[in-house]
Image (cartoon, rainbow, N blue to C red; front, side, top):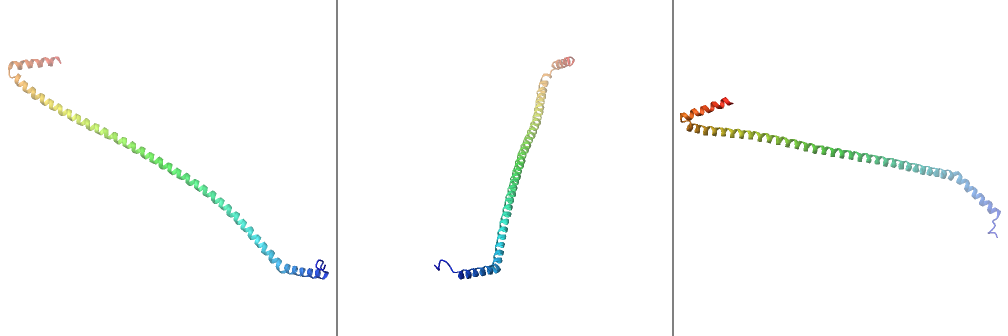
Amino acid sequence: MDLITPGSGLIFWQLFGFLGLLFILIKFAWKPMLAALDERESSIENALKAAETARNEMANLKAENEKLLAEARLERDTILKKAHDASAKMIEDAKAEAVKTGAQMIENAKAVIETEKKAALADVKTQVATLTLEVTEKLLRKNLSEDKAQKELVDEFIKDLKLN
């Protein structure tokens, strides 16, 4: 039964050893252990705060990146629209210039044709007049070689002059 119920001396010495060890631990180990635990707790708290701050900064950076990306897309769309409008305007201007140049060329060609036509008509009139004069001269020489024919022609001219 000795093993089951310890003696009072054993309890006293065990209590004395325990209290001595407890005193030594409190005096020399407890404060450094608490300080180490407090330091570890504060470093963990600081790490959690830093992680929260980093997460917030990442969220802010992500939002800012999204905003910049949206602005870049908007600017790209604006630039593309301006480029498209400018190219359409250039094409329209080129078409208008081509139509204007074509019309000018047609007008110039018409003027040249009209000038050539007038020159050709004048040349034809001149040739017709020359031929008419030559034919008339030959006819008159042949017809007016007689005096009687000359008098009849003069009388006919006089009648025509009085009628007009």
